[in-house]
Image (tube, rainbow, N blue to C red; front, side, top):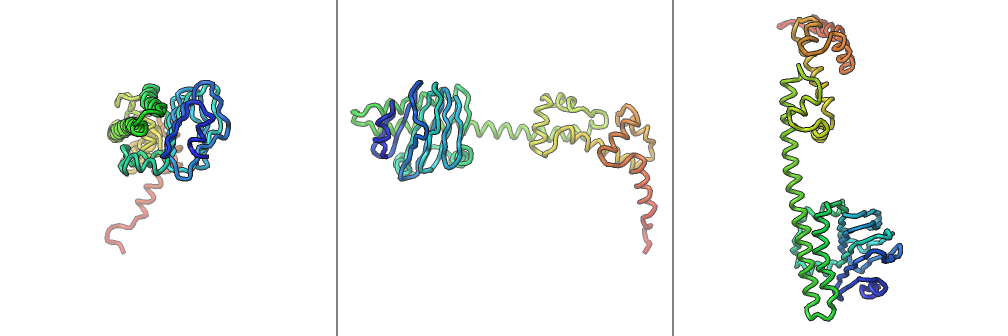
Length: 303
């Protein structure tokens, strides 16, 4: 089936002879399950769902696209529409490899990082404001496609696609920049947490203290710490605190009661229970182990 044949039984579906098709699916239009957009060449397919939902299959993967989603399926020979909801409002834009090569002259307006991202994760949920902006741009493509008697119809379509793709590029690049800024901020917060922990862990054992000092929520601090280390904030506090206890056991003659007081435990029993859970040793067992190792070590100069 060529593109013109594909448009015959569909409302608001338009094509050009050189490998382009756009389909505006309006509220109430009946779309047959298993509708296939296919080509002898690989195709690039853009889908925007304004309302309702579409279930699409591409390259063996099935994607459910609810409202306010955008997808870009890149370089596959076909896309199958498995189902649409009764209230579905969506746009599907389809172009062949040769059409894209002609349109962009091997210089597409989108960065290569966007292509890589979409190959792995073709579906994006976008804010309603962003979806509305994309809808405005793609509606211009529909308007250009309707004008079949216009002497410069193909050129109008190409220009409209360029504007749409520039908008996609703008959204992606801004999102990437925001993610980089966010990533740098998270890295700085993690470093500040580690510094703060090393200074205050003797007095402060609660996640809420560190989050409050850094002016963020405990949940956000936990996400940052786990993203950087694979361990949550509480685990870091416990490990650092047990390390402080070990240091005191190894390098001082302080009583257990004194260590518990200095490290802000309510009593020796609470510290002992905590240390046993973290290390597997009781306080007495570990101190005896250290003493035994010290007395069994050879003196300097011994052969």
